[in-house]
Picture 1 (cartoon, protein in one colour):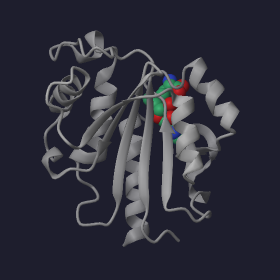
Picture 2 (tube, protein in one colour):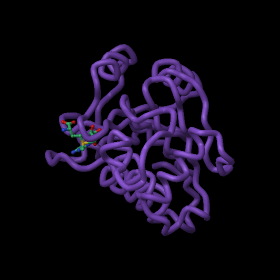
Picture 3 (spheres, rainbow, N blue to C red):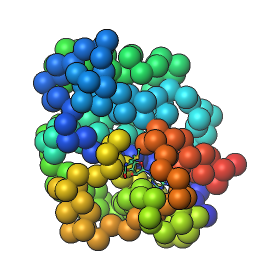
Picture 4 (cartoon, rainbow, N blue to C red):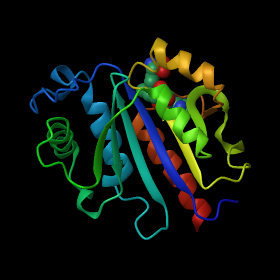
Length: 195
Ligand SMILES: C[S@@+](CC[C@H](N)C(=O)[O-])C[C@H]1O[C@@H](n2cnc3c(N)ncnc32)[C@H](O)[C@@H]1O
């Protein structure tokens, strides 16, 4: 039983432009599917599923295996929608007054995973073909991290890193869900544990 769970989602986006050059009128095309990240941020923070619960959440987006955008829970994020998130991402990438709930740093996925595993994180890969998610959480940990692919799943470099770290895969069932749906499902599992 997890007493006070902290949840982190790690999303890998090999193609999103790291210079912040994309149009709000065409997020999927000009942003190379940045809409997937915006929708996932909305699922994590905007739909406010954990309001009133002691769950601290974080979403880390790894862009081009080089830039990390780390988003944390904030009350300002509620009910804003995908384009609002795209504006936050753009101002952060362009270093134009980013808000304090987002941080930009430089790291590869591999270096980042090395760091959080050294800190004792339990890292799971969300994968349709993995072990049923019902069995995770037996290990006591204060920090659970879940890695998700984008609309195309994981690229070759990410799959290699996953193999290197021998990360266990967990499945939410046979259906291929959107990343944002997976996030909402994981949060609601933790929510039920808290109640
Ligand atoms: C839209 S899906 C990717 C679909 C892509 N065509 C593929 O084959 O991986 C985005 C991500 O959500 C996660 N995901 C989707 N369905 C899942 C499931 N049933 N169980 C666990 N994770 C899932 C995976 O991490 C996946 O990379």
